[in-house]
Image (tube, rainbow, N blue to C red; front, side, top):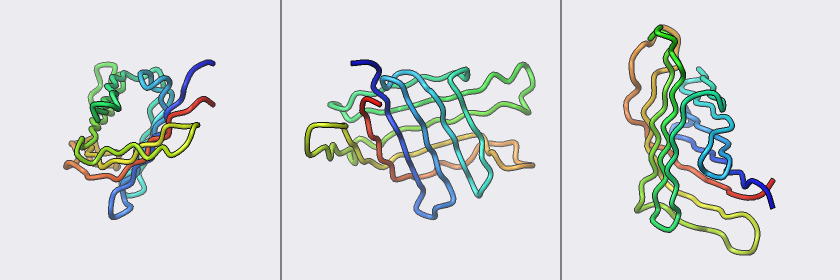
Length: 132
């Protein structure tokens, strides 16, 4: 059957923060992007990634980190975690598994001139997990 792909889309209540990711078999990053106040940072499969996903236990975490090559001015990272009490399986028929949940995210600011960590940002997310 091949590799299943997870498509994650998240948005803050203000709409100023967006986090999107494509995940192979829910254990390997294909790509991701984080946008805060229209400033965007991208991640790809070559960046460091650790994912924990266990739908039955309502656990989903992701940590992404770029290789800074000893230059911490270029470091990019995201720490993302779902809120288990909000995790819902809304799949209603055969086909893709669909989950909705609230999540939190902390990251290195992608904004120019900002070299510190963002506050914890609340997000509303949808994850669609299916064969391409």
